[in-house]
Every structure is written in C-alpha cells, then in structure tokens.
Image (tube, rainbow, N blue to C red):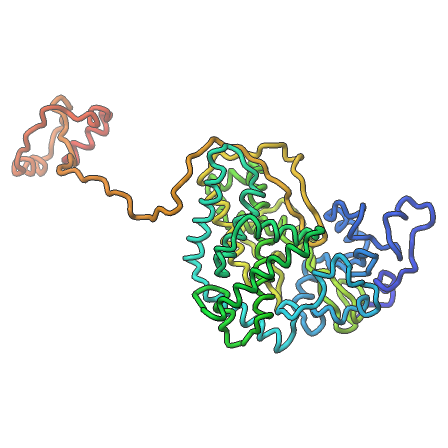
Length: 501
C-alpha cells in the first residue's frame, strides 16, 4: 500500500486549489486538478507530459462536468491495470461518481462509459461466453480471402480519384477502406456506402445528429442479424449467430456494432496516420522505397507514435489498491491511456529511436479485453498503404505539414484531411482476375549463342583443347554478326569464345 502522503492527490480530495488571482486558477478545476476538456486540453499530449512531471505515472484529472478520474500515464502501470482483473474491472456500475449522482444521464461521455451487456464490459463466466463467441467467429475468417477483398476495395477507391491528379486521402480513402472491408467481413456489402461512413463518423463526433446516426447503424445491423438467423452464410455474422454460446438477437446486434465501430475508428485513424508519416517524413519514405523498412514495420512504428485511440474509457477499481505511487480507492475510475503510455520515458528515453517490429506498444490494449481483431486492422493498414503507393508512386502532400488539422478528443486524435497531388493515372479493372491475360506467342527458334567473329584474336590452344576442337563438328558461320555481339567488348567476346559460345 502507498504511504498516506500520496492521498493529497487523490480524486476525492478537492481542498487544494490555486490562490485567488493566480493565472492558472481559471484553467484548473476543484482541488487544483487539470481538466481533460476545455481550453487547457487543446494539446492533450503536452498536458499529459505536464501531468507526468507533476504526479508521476498516474495522475488525478477531471472529466466533463468536473467529474474526478485518474489517467494512467506509465507504460508498465497501464499494462498492470489491464492485466489485473482481480483489481480492476470495466463494469462502470461500481463507479463511485456515478453512484453518487455526479455523472448525469446526459453526460457527454456516458455513451463510452455506460455499462452494456457486451464482452468488453463483462467479467468472469459471462465474459468468457461473450468473448468466446466473438473470437470464435473471428477465427473463421479466411485471411487470404480477406487480403483479396482489401486489395479490391483499395483499387475501387483509388479509381474514384486517380484521374483527377489530386485527392484527400482521409475523406476519400482512409475513412472508406476500413468500413468497406468490415461490411464485407460482417456480410453486409450491400449496406456499404457513403451514408454508413458518414453515420459512423457523425456518431463518433457526438454531434446533434449522433443519436439518429447511431440508430441508422443499429437498424442495419439488426436487419443483418435477423437475416443471418434465418439463413446463415459463410460470414462473421452467421458464425456469431450460430456459435454454441447462444447469443440473443440483442447480443448479436450489440457485438456487431462494437466490432464495426471500433474496427472502423481505429483502422481509419491508423491508415491516415501511416500515410501522413510517409508523406511528411522523407527519411521514413526513403526507408520504405529503399527496402530498409517494410510496410508492416511502418505500421508498428505508427502504432507507437500515434495510437488510434489516445485513451479508452474506462477501468474501475474493485478494491482499495495502489498504482503508480497513488492510492486508488474502491470505485475510482481510471483511463487506460495508450498515447502517453507509449511515450513513457522509462520505455522510450529517445522518441526518435526506431521501434519497427516492436509490438509491445499499448495500441491494442492487453489482458482479457485486448483487441481481438487487431490482425484485421493491421492487414487493412498494410495493404491500404502498399496498394496506394503502388498505384500512385509520385504522390505528394499538397500543403505544408503545419497546415494539417486535427480533431482531438480524450479518446482519439483524428486527422481532418490529408490533401495530396500526383500525376493523373488511368483507372484499373478491379474485376480482372490474375492469370487470364493472353500468353505471348512463343518463337519457334531461338538464337542461344553465336561464335566469335573471325577477326577476333585467337590465343594458342592447349593440346587438350586442340583435340576437342578437332573432334567437334564445325558449325557454319552466320551470314551477319548479331547486333548484341557487336556491342560486346573485347574481353567479353574473348570469354564467349573461350567457353565455346
């Protein structure tokens, strides 16, 4: 347990505040705690480093409406929290501020925090049942076929703008590719379109129409679940419906929603971040072009530097405990924070160091709730980046890097747009199958070799070579020396003669 001296920074101690007139007074909340929203939180990365300096690996903060919360900044502390289900749970029904009425039903973060009957919020046997159904359905995915689907959709999307010579790789590519692939995986390719992409983005932004957008997605997934319950096929939804865990229609629909939205948001951010790095860092692109780095290695580097989710809501203490030198009370809430955890100085003292191939980042979580579909996200990002660079090898950023804009919240940092330019390219036939091209007509005769010209100087042959030459039949010399022989130098012509060519 932590000595009593640490309790002064606890989320339930609001007695410490800046003196009146202090410039920082208006930026701090009750208890002198930093807010993760509002003017001070415009640059969360800088705020996290400030909190690390002031409090260490675990810091007390305030959410919207000044609701107290801990944010876990240390790499080891984040891993300990997600891997200790006996101490921490994702069931928000034990969250003390919620029980005490501090968190209202209309709180902006309630859609993220509110308990739902899904595997990411369940524990024990119920977690094993629900999680088992999801992972079981995922194991039925044919990854070879999946990669073909990803490749086809990349070509479809690039065809939409390749002739224009310019594009926005966020709205026209990164936002669409993950949703198209996930609709294919779930078995709803007919539902894919601009509308479902806009609905997902609108819901995640929490706009005034977010509820309607969410309902549109829920209705589409409900129709899909009912359809597959009646007529199963070979897709993720059918295997989820028919899994021995026996999920109800509501459970199937909610898990489809979680898989679709989580995979879409995470992979869209990941794909945009990798493309941005390739376009803005000449060394990064040179390593890719020169073969010193593969695209999968570039993806892992991006997962370290810019994880798709900055923080995940939330874990809750099941008992009195200690984490990162702070006393954590039963019912306290804690943010799992991959973004500050990935840059923990104890793990990465040099942020410019190469992290390619190192998968010990926090981007996909860990423990019982580790992301089960991370290989799908990696495949979409790998192929999405590689295919785009193959189609548009001359693609360049069409603005200054400083002009790029971000939409940032506690949970994620989303690139708003990524304008690029390139030489216009013709579209490709996405329905063309490999191996069906016409085979070139074969030549009936091939000129394999030519004798040395008569004018070439001949060295004195040994007795053995003379005997061999005498026994060998003489071939008639060609009427004219081929052009390829005339281009050869004296030494190469001598070698060809010496070897009997």
